[in-house]
Length: 286
Ligand code: ADP
Ligand code: MG
Image (cartoon, rainbow, N blue to C red):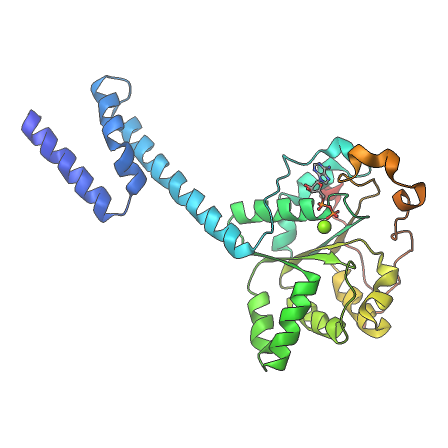
C-alpha cells in the first residue's frame, strides 16, 4: 500500500469510528497504528485492542448508569469485606450468593444481625455484583419505601408504583426494624412483597428477629402474611458478631449493649394455605 492510500484508509477508519460512535477506539487509534508500524502488534491484535477498549468503555458506562439507577447509597464490594472480623459468617456461603442464582430463582435473602455487623455492606456488595452481571437492581431503606408507597396510595397510583418496584430483578430493602413502621405501612409492604412473590428476588436487612415482626409492623396478622411469603423461598444469613463501626472503641461499649442481639427469639411458624413453608436451603450456600 502506498503512503497516500494508507493515509486515506486511516481517514476512512476514523470516519467510520465517528459514524459508529466508538470514541474510545478513535482515541486509541493513533497509538495502535504506531504499534503496528513498530512491529509490536499485528493487524489482528490491533483490531482486538480497538474493540476491547471500546467495549470496556461501554461496559463501564453501563455499570455506572445501572448503579445510579439502583440508587445504592454508597459503593461497597465483597472484596472490601473483612470476613475475618465476622467469624460467624460463612465466607463460602456469601460467595455462593454472589453467583446470583438466587436472583434467577426469585429467592429472598435475609441478612440479620445487630447494628454495624455489615448487613448493608453485604447487601450493597451483592447488589453491585448483580449490576455488573447485567441485572436490574433497586435499593431502598424500608422507611423510604413505605413513604413512597403511602404517597402513591394517597395519589391513587399505588398499582403503578408497585408495578415499577416489581420491574427490577433484585429489590434490596434495607434497615427493617430501625424505625417504627407507620400505621398501614405493613399492609403496603405486604402488597409489594406479594406482587414480587416467586417473581422477583429480594435482599432484606434487619436488626430484628422474625418473632418481633408483629410488634414492628403493629399487626401480627400482616406480619405473619409477610413472613409467609418472605420465608418460603428464603436464605437466612444471621450475623452474630460485634459492630465494625465500634471496633476501635469496643472496650468503651458496655457488655449489655454489645451482647444485646434482638435476634435470639425463634421465628414464628407462619401458616400456609396450600403447603407448609419450607426454608429453601441450597446446599451450594453451605
Ligand atoms: P449494618 O448495616 O449491619 O448496620 P454496615 O454494613 O452499614 O452495618 O456496616 C457499618 C460500616 O462498617 C460500613 O462502613 C461497612 O462498610 C463497615 N463494615 C462492616 N462490617 C465490615 C467488615 N466485616 N469488613 C469491612 N467493613 C465492614
Ligand atoms: Mg445497615
